[in-house]
Image 1 (cartoon, rainbow, N blue to C red):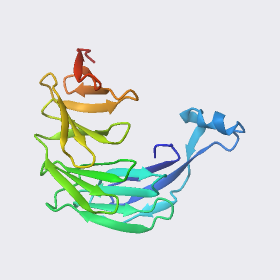
Image 2 (image 1 turned 90 degrees about the vertical axis):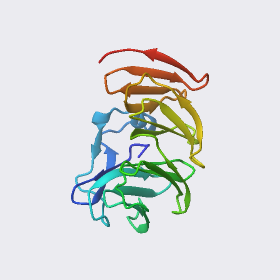
Image 3 (image 1 turned 180 degrees about the horizontal axis):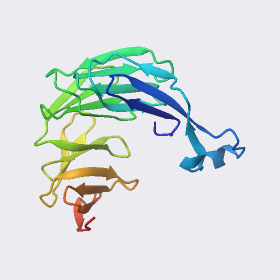
Length: 221
């Protein structure tokens, strides 16, 4: 989860395990000091507090949120299953209409969910209540789906080598940022709403979203 209090893992046995992360018991520092503690001061509980079932194939992607009290799992079986994070209670399932494996999923803080299936190259937008809102085909395979910090936009990148910015309310294309003709395999959005993109060949590109101007940096790994 974004606050680091929970870790969820999906496995080949089709289950999802949910673990508590806590500060070491011997650590008597203030709450603020604990929040600023390093990873070495945090430990995962010995046993998971939930083991969630329901899928018929390998788990491929996960999302968990304390604020939304939800954990969502996608699977090769083409389903996306919702559970309550706190109680582990089953809520609902979404079946990919094409039955293709769910490759990636992202969820915004306002409760919109996007699923991507690499087999049919389709993005599908749902509400957190499972209502289908929109679908859109991607041009080429996508390797990266990242939300903007405000949660209003979805940045998509992959084999085509460019970044496509879509609305998280309709999947409409808002803007496209051209690359250098190399497949993009990694992508992150900075707090300043800029994009950092890495290519298969080891290049790093910096995109300034405010000016829609690409500043290229051919920094080899």
